[in-house]
Image (cartoon, rainbow, N blue to C red; front, top):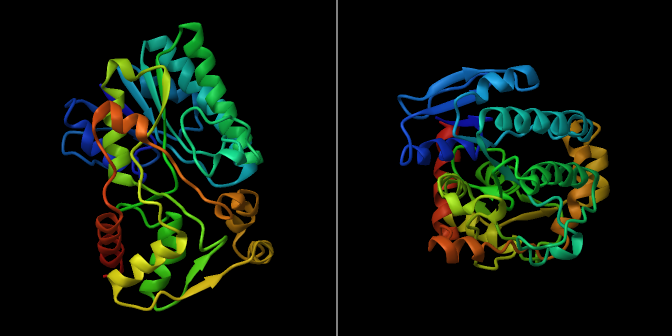
Length: 311
């Protein structure tokens, strides 16, 4: 049995599809899980019911953690560490291995122009401090020999099966509506993106590769060093529209946050949009011989998905 906690999300959906190559026993855990494969085992659970996590993990050889809690600092501080402790405890009890799909918030600001698995962990934000805490919880157990685990990291993502990625929300959906793409940083800075099906494929492969455990891996991510402006131009070209851009200053996020609370959470992370953002996945590519999907191909599939949602 291989179990996904946080099924139905942008990484979990392609992960579930890819796991069929390795097992016919897949358990999907979320509040309202839905089958991705015909024979998936559904396990409804509010994962903040930490006592229920042990039941969800039982009999699992591998447990993938792909959940995303509400994008709110207090929610993260109150929920993430306790949730991860519960997952670790359940996996230790049942002898399950852990694969945690993570982001880049814990990396030092100086690392953002070229992030590798060895980049210093010195988060410049409070959300980053939470992510570092999760990293430390897992690696402490790994170093003690009590847990086998992988931390798989991705950059900002784009692709099908989600309309919530930053690239979809700020650029693709606006251009589809005939509006301007919105930019929260420097449009001329490089920004690499992880294509969600690539992330799902890589995470499934890592979870089923014995010598991949007890280390951090960056999943395949665009090698092309495209600027934010070039991504917008690519999307606009595919749609046959002008690449109009509206720059949103950081102070405006605070104002908009009065009406859209989630936007209040963005300013502390905006440093990532004001400098080059290069996510290096060469370690994975060299080990497995798999590279990221070409950006133009990924953008076309993302747009086809978003167009289908409008019908």
